[in-house]
Length: 168
Image 1 (tube, rainbow, N blue to C red):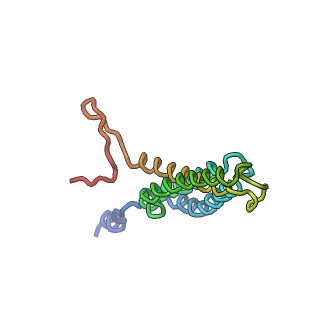
Image 2: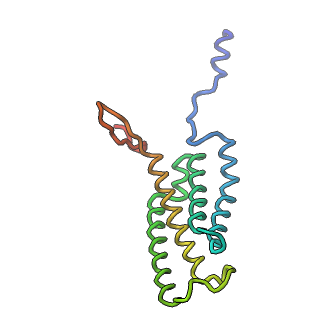
């Protein structure tokens, strides 16, 4: 047995590369996702005390799922929040917002809130939750669709390709 054959046998075989980034980024994303989600939820619930709380909270919650998608790959993020679920959450959030506007105009003509604390704020926290659902789901859907689609130019024409399409 020669020296070269010893080193040949010691080389590891090719392994399948896991989707996403390296282990350090995955570990950091795992630690940070809870804090991001909690901060987005906090901004949403106490949004009546700061300007545009529901919008900010929705963006932060969507960034939590975008962080998962960037670190672990799209399959992992879609297991947590799929595109169909995001589509339904977007519609439910918009519908709830219009229902809360109707309730507020009908039953509280003098104003939406009666105080500054969470449970004294009337319908504003509920409206912020519906806005956060709509904004967060919409932003996640846009990012996941843009992450899956590619444009290729062939003979002067642009063709829209999907990464998830199987080759035949």
